[in-house]
Amino acid sequence: MTYAIEIESVTKDFPLPVRGRKLRAVDSLSLQVESNVIYGLLGPNGSGKSTTIKLLLGLLKTTEGRCLINGKSVYEPSIRNEVGYLPEAPYYYRFLTGIELVVYFARLQGIKKREALAQAENLLFRVGLEDAKDNRIGTYSKGMLQRVGLAQALVGDPSLLILDEPIAGVDPIGAVDIASLIRELKEQGKTILLCSHLLSQVEALCDRVAILESGRLLAEGPLDKLLVSEEEKTLSIKNLDTEDRERMVKTAISLGGQVSVSRISLETLYLQLIGEKQRKAKLEREDSDQ
Ligand SMILES: Nc1ncnc2c1ncn2[C@@H]1O[C@H](COP(=O)(O)OP(=O)(O)OP(=O)(O)O)[C@@H](O)[C@H]1O
Ligand SMILES: [Mg+2]
Image 1 (cartoon, rainbow, N blue to C red):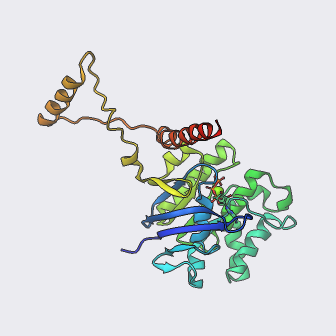
Image 2: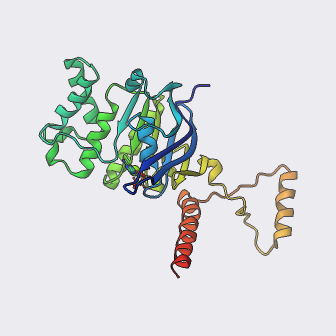
Image 3: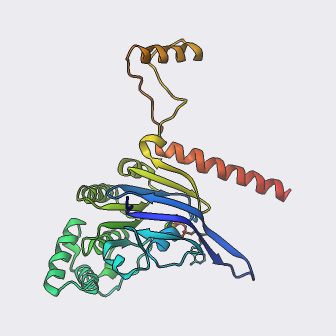
């Protein structure tokens, strides 16, 4: 089976200004993303999400391991047309208008002038920028920049979209619009990898997530599995001790009944995993300071 994305034991070190020292931004990371899923890459600031994305795009070189897109090395030029990328902090030419910018990216992909203009009009409409398409990028608000960035990522109809915080800075209604656009893209058969700190939106949107911490994988899997809390089997029966409750569950199952298992929220899982790690690290720091 060919995965849309394969990250095989990838490590990325950045040299530090102190001689001989290095910062490990990604640490022995392995991930596989199937086609036609919405995949969330989560983790605290500095946990290696954007670095992983840049490695996937071939913008950075891995220190160890390799990344594949649609089964091919990310350094193969033909891969470029299969991937759309929304950077974390995009820098666009301020004096171009929205439509000029999207046309410019389409032309860079070798799309003919007339087709480039038609695509740009259509994409700016899809991201809700039709009224601002003739304004200069320099006058755009943060959310408008995100939207034009998304339009730019969709140029050429790529099968894989890599979106680094697509909803950051977008107002709540706009965030709903972008989420439904992402869902629409999935319905069209595309694969979407996204980073976001907005866990409730990730939970509503993603099929599967990976949670990184200090460049390492803390948890990975489909949300349906990750968010099922084994300890929280809730039956609406009161005044029973644990043993009797287990017996009730077993009896219900043996009678062919269905026992619903309650789900925790993605935010709860994240806070459990990351909060606990950060609390331990803080205690260790305090101990070593004393
Ligand atoms: N070009 C670089 N040179 C040196 N260090 C870097 C470079 N890029 C990233 N880093 C370091 O690598 C680590 C991971 O950074 P990265 O940008 O991947 O984090 P992130 O998970 O995307 O964080 P955020 O949620 O803040 O966007 C950080 O410690 C960062 O300082
Ligand atoms: Mg980042």
